[in-house]
Length: 293
Image 1 (cartoon, rainbow, N blue to C red):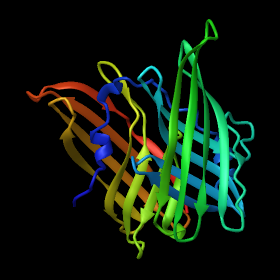
Image 2 (image 1 turned 180 degrees about the vertical axis):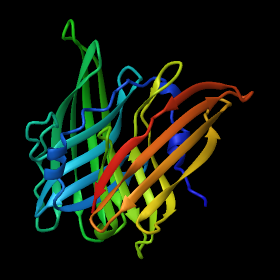
Image 3 (image 1 turned 120 degrees about the vertical axis):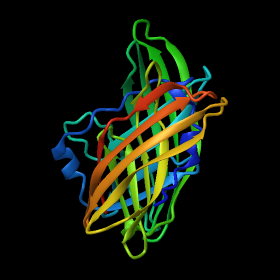
Image 4 (image 1 turned 60 degrees about the vertical axis):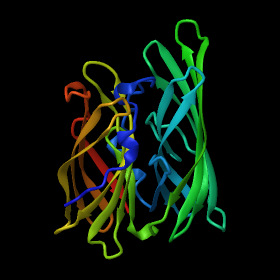
């Protein structure tokens, strides 16, 4: 069985070259996750495979999980993942502002959150919006990040992502959206007969050996559903842009019901030079994920 992997991962700067190391944000308590689950799911991705997962209750967006890469004045890249909730409760999840759907099913929303980078702290602002319909969804999202030195309080870098258009072409009733245990977005799309996972969109963070980290977004495809179960272990190779290759090992498995999908995902990326020697390895480890219909 062939499972396609988006080229975005294979072209990703391996080992975190030029990127900020932005660890995953804390996962909200289980009670908070359950409270946010009721409603409808919408999901999509940008042309760079950055996923966005949206939950709606009535005419209000109650939760959004998104991934967006911001270019910095320093020449570095800031990989931003954000979970925002209309009612965050006692969790540290940023509060989602706006998000009211108009009669035409249009909305705008925003959130502000902080990210601890060790000796530095980043303040990230994100805004997103679009149109959510039963058959198709479209929109755009953007981000602005200020990186400050903790000791001096001085701004040391500024990063921004211009409006990235996102789209969801699968009808809402065949979309499951949610997040992983790293609080990264996941979007699962089914075939018309609901017998196949046509696409699984995700993002993840992994530290590398001997140094660096990666935070790519990707999409994998074509997983038959048998007795409510789906998934496979498979590998993919591609050029690393420096004369070598990137080898990717995937382990993706899940279970599906009418209202919910759960499972695990593991990705190990290995960079190999032109002679075939492994120069860097980045394992995500097994990551649990869950999504709602």
